[in-house]
Image 1 (cartoon, one colour):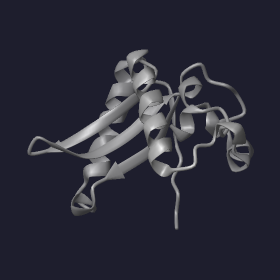
Image 2: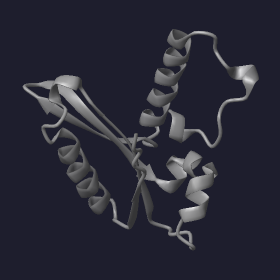
Image 3: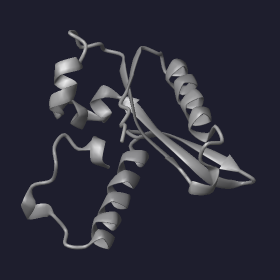
Image 4: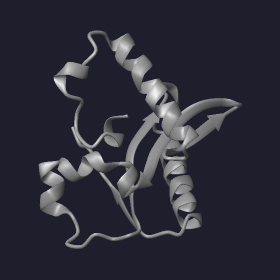
Amino acid sequence: MHFHRPRGLPRAKWLPTRAQRGKRNRREKRALVDRRCAHGILVYAEGEPIGWCQYGPQGELPRIDNIRGYRRLAPGHSSPRLWRITCFAVLKPYRKRGVAGAALRAALESIQKLGGGLVEAYPITR
């Protein structure tokens, strides 16, 4: 839910425990899915989900616009077809096996089917 919110929640709406925040996030994500305002790719192995990739149009993932580093590097124009790939998750036993690459290819195929456009991604190096 991090990138779906334009900014962080105000302190008055912070929840004290991780379990409470998780419950709220699941409820809010379900509402976005029901309204078709959330895009994601699930990767399966032997019928079990092992990886995930979140993507969506700029308006669906607005929080990135507030990141100082992004504002410095952002394209000089606002594209009506700007897509964002914001998150990957892969179960530990399946890492380094091409799961994220498969999720990325599927996300790009889905974006193409939805009309295509400019696609941004946000790598984090540690």
